[in-house]
Each structure stands twice: as C-alpha cells, then as structure tokens.
Image (cartoon, rainbow, N blue to C red):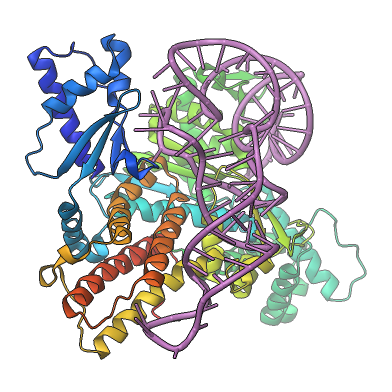
Length: 554
RNA sequence: GCGCCCAUGGCUCAGCUGGAUAGAGCGUCGGACUACGAAUCCGAAGGUCGAAGGUUCGAAUCCUUCUGGGCGUACCA
C-alpha cells in the first residue's frame, strides 16, 4: 500500500512539474509512513515539507498542488487532507482494504516474498568458528542472525549461499593437536604437567579416550612429532562434525564449508601477494611485507607476511574474499563478532585492492552476549574449558526459544541472555506469545470445521461484513508484512520481524477476546474465519523466516 | 592516548534514511473464564530520551564537547 501511494505521489509531482505549478527539481525519497494517530489518516507523507526548501514556498501550498494532481484511477482513496505544517494524510476506502487479502490467500506461503534481489548471487558467511572446540553460547547469536539474514534474502529473491570459513591453518590448530597429545599422556598415567596454554576442556579428554580406544598400543610406538599432526587432523575433523550436528539441531544448514588450508594450495596466497606487490599495494621492510591499507583509510598499514616468512591471517583473508568473488558472488555479507570491528577497514582495503568496490561487501557486527542465569552473570573461558555449549542451550531452552531470544534485539546492541528466563514457559517468554496465537488460530479452524464451516477462500466470502475497527487494524497489519520483509532485507536487520509478529499477535489476541469468530451468523462466521486464516498465514510465514516453528497445538 | 559501539519509564528493549501528543514487553496495582485455547484480554500508575551547546519550520534521531559502560588498538586468529 505504501508503494502504491508513493507511486501516486510521484506521478502527481511529475504532473505539477509539467504544468509548471512547481519548479522542477530532483525528487526527494518519497516517504509514506503510518501515522500514530488514527485522526491523521491511514497513511501520511511529509513530501510537501521536504520540497518546501527547494521550492521556497509554503509547504501547505505545495501540498495543495500535489493533491490536485493526484490521479486515483483505482479509486482507493476515501479522502486526502492537508494537516499541520504540511503533512498530506491519506484516508483509504474501507472496501478497498479487504481486497488486499486476496494476495495473502492466493500467495499463501509465498506471501511476503518478493523479487527485490532479482536472482543476484550473494553469499552470507557466518559462524566460522575455529574447530578447536564445540560451539558455545557466544557463537549462537551470530549463527542465528546469519541464518535469518540468509532466509530473509532468499525470500526476497536473492540467490543465497551460506558459508562457514574453517580457520584450520593457524597455529591454534597445532595447539589443538598438542592438547590431545598431552591429554593422551596424562590418561596413560604419566605424571606430567598438562601445559596451561593447551585447551583444558573435557571434550579434549573425550577425544583422547576415543583415540586410545581405536588405536590402542599402536600409539606408544610413535614419536611426538609423528603423532601431533595426526591428532590435530583427527581432532579437527571430529570437532567439526560435532559443530555441524549442533548447527543442524539449531536449524542451520550451510551450503559450503570452506577450508583455509585450501587457499594455500597451488601457491594461491603467494601469487596473490605477488600481484598485489606488482600493483604497488605492498612494500617490504626487512623480511616482512606490509600492505598499504592506509591508502584506503585504515589507521595504519598491516603486515601480510611475517618476519619468519609466514603469511598472516589477513593475507589469507584477502585471498579468501578474492576467491568468493571468483566464485561469482556479486555481494558478500560477513557476520562478525563485534570484537572484530577494528578489522573492518583492513578488509575493505583488501577487497578494493583486488578491484572490488566497497559495496560488494557488507559486514554485520553482532555484539557479544552476556550470559545470565536468573540474573547472575555466568563466566566463560574457552581455553579453560568453562563455557555453556550451544548444544546445552538447545537441550535446555529449546531451539525456538533460543533463536527467538537472539533475534529480538538489534544485532548492534548488547544482549543479555538469561538461561532460566528463556527456559520458562510463561508470559515472560515472548516466543510463546506468538506461537500461542498461531496455535489458537489452528484451533479455531479445527473447531469451525467440526461445526460445518470449511476453511474459506477469498472468492467465497463477503468481506464487506468485516466492519469492526479491530478488523480494519488486522488487515492493515497484514498488509504491512511484505514491506517489512523488504525493509529487513535492505537493512539486514532481522530484529524487525519479531517486533512485527508480536504486534500482529497482539492485535489478533485482542480481537479474539472481544469478538467471536464462530457464531450462528453463517456469512459473518465465514468472513471472520477467512480473516483469521490470513493472520495465521502471515504468522506462519514470519515465524518460518526466523526458523521458529509455528505449532498447530501447544 | 586514539578508534568503533552503546546510553530511551523500576528492569529488558523498539522507535521505520528528522515529523504531528516518545511506544512495547516484564515487573507493580486493579479487573475479565458455565460459548471458538486465560501461555489470553481490559484498565491504571510510571520517561526533562546520559549532560550541555548547535543546525531548522520541527531533533530520541544530524553536528560539537563532556560523562558513564563495552570492545578494539598484534609480525593472534
């Protein structure tokens, strides 16, 4: 609806230009908004005020010209008013509203989808945790946000690929192998001190036991240097397997797991650095190579090859992003923990040096999570093996509640995650509020069917019978859904969806409590059943986009 | 020191590229189940939007300074 009105306004202004009523100028972004007050109409625009400065005229006068030029061919407008300093308020004809429900019914599970992305090939990279231990709660938020951004982009017509970058080439992998090695020895009863820089977690012990069970005495014969590479690979593969399982239980499936090691094959990184050096982005200082990231606005230059001749993580990351673009992605979205924000200018420098424009990359920062249990902070440390794993959270609070909790806040703001609160199946836990609305609708449909009212379709009902104010509010809310998804896709802000669903559920619950859907009046019952059905469709689609289930009963 | 992020009722947060009287949820207080699910609904109290300046018809939103908190500032990843 907003779009329709924006179109009408655009045409009207063009007409005013042609007639010379307004001085021609660049069109501002036409913003149509929902006024807080009903008295201000169904929709409103500040267009006339936006134009006032360039036109150097009274905004109310401009508004008059615009309104005169409006060509409401479809006949959707009941009236249009000028208010306050120059707002244009639109009142939509009551009959027109309910015709909007036709789309909902016909598109059904596709309602909310769009072709905004036009099939653009786009990649969302997220989680990308080192396979040195199981995923923990700290990874969970970024995981859900990345997944939902991918889902939103998918329904918005993008060709989306979800990717997990495995940092399996750094020295923390060697640390992993050493950790298992020393654990093996302590398990054999050797009285050695377990190194404090190794991973202390119980999962290391489990891995060591597993290896002893498999290999038995064969282990004894191998030297430390032989053993560690084997242990490293074994542990990494096994941990990664566990990570995949946990993610799947959390509703997340990746299209691609990309190994950092692969980048080094065929001297890929070496050649990249050579090219960059020829292009003048790299200079030498002793035996280290520096990338001139300051040319692109970074605060200092960055090392790409260390004094010992090994490339840095940053060097590999440039190669990795180059690889992404070579695979045909025209846009890449990286979901990073907020503690990596200092890395952003460097990354942008990197992609520009390989010839990409800045808008080929979006970085979404996800703030860290404060984990609480009944209001008391829970301390975590990966190295010490003290953390709440993702698996534990899924088992304890459930996939739906966990996901919903992570999605309710702007990713850029800090989030308190209270395990006890998330677990509570009560009105303190918002996810049940919306799921309950969906279950309630399903229940109404079952009851109606029992009483001889099959689920109606658009053509079978007289929507003119829906005359209540609350019904009008419901239809309006339903109509907002596609715009909302588009906005979320444009801004990469999933949190808007939970807020929307909550509002819709609230309007529905309120309507339900005040009015009976199923009554003795057959025509009215059918009309209301239809309305409620469309609410159910939107709830289900919206929850689906969050990866949260929409239960028929609960 | 420098850089990024955050600051909105008792608590947790929205506020849609500046718009009309700042909104939810939780908590508190008071009400509603012999008809479709009370995990629901209705009502009330509660805010000088961290502070001070500035920009303009108009600021929670933009600019400057300050205060408080988080993070970063590696030849780690």
